[in-house]
Image (cartoon, rainbow, N blue to C red; front, side, top):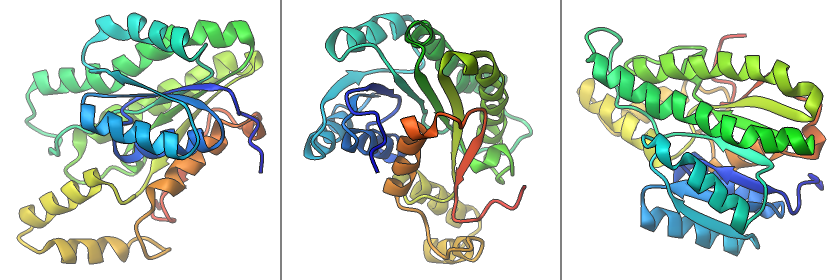
Amino acid sequence: MDLGIKGKVALVMASSRGLGQAMAVSLAREGVKVAVTGRSPEGLQKSVELIQAAGGTALALNWDLSDASVIDSLVSKVEKELGPIDILINNTGGPPPTPAAGQDPALWQKSFNDMVLSLIAITDRVLPGMRQRQWGRIITSTTSGAIAPIKNLAISNTLRAALLAWSKTLAAEVAHEGITVNIIMPGRVATDRLRQLDEARAKRESTSYEEVVKASLRQIPVGRYGDPKEYGDAAAFLASQNASFITGTVMRIDGGQTQAI
């Protein structure tokens, strides 16, 4: 299927590994020119290599989401070297696992700045260009915990739920301008982050990593963890011309795990 986005330009946040990297590579396979961002030079280089192996064009940007002062200059660099940004993939790393009660307000504030406010500011920077061209795709990657809270991930559950409300509100504001705004939501997709969470759970519950995985698989109707490529391909579809009538929605890539309707 031709997704109709060859030659478009994408900015994929937090794409030096994991789900961000998978989304960047899937877009590259469709002929999209991709700017990848992150704080790990090695991870960024790996993303560039994967994009080039897929036949794509890549630009690597060392980008710390906690520093709002770099947004304009780095977006301008993408526009200068690749062209105007047509597709924005909002994505961040996850906060440390914590319960809801008793967390330092400074941790809440830092997490809000890094995971919510930074993405809103980046979106506000690229949105005027999309409006001018009457075409754009804004896709925000969150977590299933935003609609079915996950134990011991209180900060992630809370702040990513805020992104759902923001995305839904924005979608209605820009739909008539050819811009779609959607949420993509992973279940248990096999990344380093998921392994770290499973290992942390095993330690917390005094059990083995293997037992944690077995327990998780029993909750997933398809009976396995997701492949990052499956997640990336879903994001590429939402970015496509074919998905022009899909906006203000949440796409779950979770093997049927999330029980909420």
